[in-house]
Structures are given as C-alpha cells and as structure tokens.
Image (tube, rainbow, N blue to C red; front, side, top):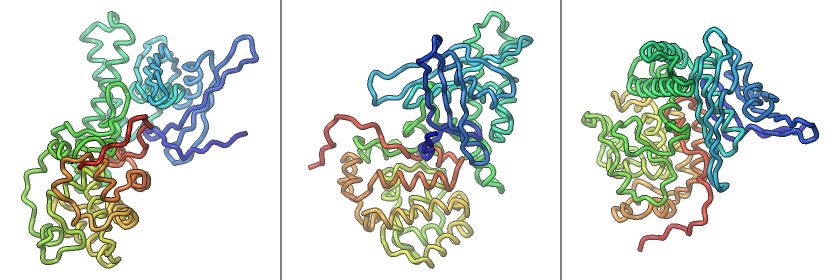
Length: 422
C-alpha cells in the first residue's frame, strides 16, 4: 500500500483538518464505482484515512464522512465549477440533507481546492459543521455555541416564512450564511476581547478561519480595504503593488498615545533603545514588506525580524526584551508570553535572511516602487519567509494571525518579471 505524505497543507474545519482527497474509479465493472480516500487530522493530531465508495464522487465522499456526523446524511446536490486552466482552483457547492423523515434538515457547504475531490470533501465537512451535523467533539468550543445559535435563527426564519414554501437550496443557504456570519463575528469578538485576563483562551475560542472566508468558500490572501484594524493584513501576494498604495489603506491604530516606556526601548532616540529601534513610519513599512497585520502576534514577529536583521541581538537582550514587552508594557502594547513564540521566529528569520539592518535601509524612494522589487533589494526572500510562517502556524495554531499567514506560493504565470524602478 502506498504511503502518502500528509505534510501538505491541511484545511481546517472545526477541530479537524482535511488533506488532499484521492479519487479512483473502478473501470473493470459493469457499473463503475467511485472510491475516495480523505486524510483527516483529528483533534488529537493523528492523521487517519477516511474511505468511502459510491456511484459518484459526492456519494463516495458522503460515505467516507458518515462517521463524522451525528445523523445519517446524503448529498442532495453537488455543483463543481472546474477551472479552464491548471492554474486555478475548483470551486464546490454542496447541499447536504439529513436523512430524518420526521424533519429533514438542509445545509450548504462551499470550498475551493486545487482538485475536485478535495473541494467536494471540504465543502461537505463545512456543510456538516454549519448544519449542526458534525459531532460536538469535533467542533471548536465556540463552534458549538454557533451551531446552537444557528439552529435557533434558522427555525425562526422558517416560522416567519412558512418553510414549506422555501426550496431546500434556500433553507440550506440560509443556514450556511448564518453560521458563517456568527463565526465571523465570534472571531472578531475574540480578538477585540483579547485584553481580558484569560487572553490565551479567548484568542482561540472561535473558528478564526471564518473571518477569512469569502462567500464562495475561498480564502482571503489579503484584506487591506477594511476599516477594522484587527482584520487588516496585506499578505505576500502583492508584488505588483507599491508600498505607498498599501500603506494608504492601513487603518488608524487604536486612539492611544504611545507610552513613554515603549518609546524608551523602541524609539531610535530612546535612552535604553534596543537593537533595531525604529521610527513608526518605517515600522509600518516593515509590516507591509513582511505581509503582516496589526495583531499582537503580527507585532511580535515584525519586532523580532527587525531586531534579528541587525545580526547583533544577544540571548540576554532577547530575554530582557521578552520580559519588558510581556510584563512591563501597558495594554494594548503588551505581548503575552505565548505570543513570544512569534517574536522568537521573527528574530531567527531576521538573522537568517539576507537582510542587514532593516531599520536603517528603508528609504522614501521605495514607496513608489513595486513591493516585489523592494523585497528583492532588501533581501526579503518571500519563499523562505513562508517557511517561517508555516512554523509559526504550527507553534501558535488557531489564532486569526496564524490562520491568515501566507504559506503557499502563488500559482506560476507566464507574465514577465516585475520591472525595477529607475
């Protein structure tokens, strides 16, 4: 039996994650059958193959995922939009029906993936989660609350609209939409409430991935048009844009003056300035160049990367800064002990990449050049940066900052390389 490498990107749904599905058709039988194998990482971290057989792909996926559901279900409809070329992903929309003759329930799921079997499998899993079919132990703690609230909202809508007159597709779409928006709200609430005493628990209570999902099931690779600071992030797939364009979309920080203790350590004129101390304007430029947002975890990596690029930070200075930023800094500038994992990875990345004294080499003439050209000049290798981000997501799973880290390289194109500015 061939062993598959499951180190590829897994797509999270609740407390599980789905890998790339494999589809095989019997060609030697009178009535060909579809056989699908779906690698799934469970809540405890182990990966198991879920196998199903059916008349077609949708039926095979339903058979493979039956054990994840509290109730028997079937795929009432499955629509897949296939790309015209190999550079784009497949988009799948499924209508899931609970096989309960007393009260059939419908829910929809959306997903995009590089291949059709994976797109359908993830769409079905998302439909199960949104419809309240998924076993409670497979949902995040906040996901269970969202499922209960979704059920109440959908039942209320059914009473108001005389559900018998609504087609199943509409009922399923309403359920999926309500669940998605509740998860999105929950992720935002968790971030905004991160200054509560139990910061670590709050940050991972809700499914932060919902804040990144687009209505069609695809995932945002950036969001710089939002006015909410916690949602803003530039990503790395923006080589053609300029620094000035992205910085112009950066939302205003929370209305608090930078306290003296922060200026003491991080301002170039501070008495106890650390290696990499930098002005706020240049600091914002580094956020964009590294593709990072404005959350504590993002801030930790950016500070670490800037300090690491000096190639001069000692272990004593690293320990001292960790103590200062996690114990002495006031809110909202304090970075928790757990988030210092992102700081350490940023420090390592700044040391290892071909960047030298990043806080000293930023210039105003870079503002109107393509980001790709600026990154190349400064030695910020996006490919290696993504490797560090993969390690960061593994070290800090479940947070919004980790969920939106750019891990995959953009699809190759035939476009010529970006021109260097004169």
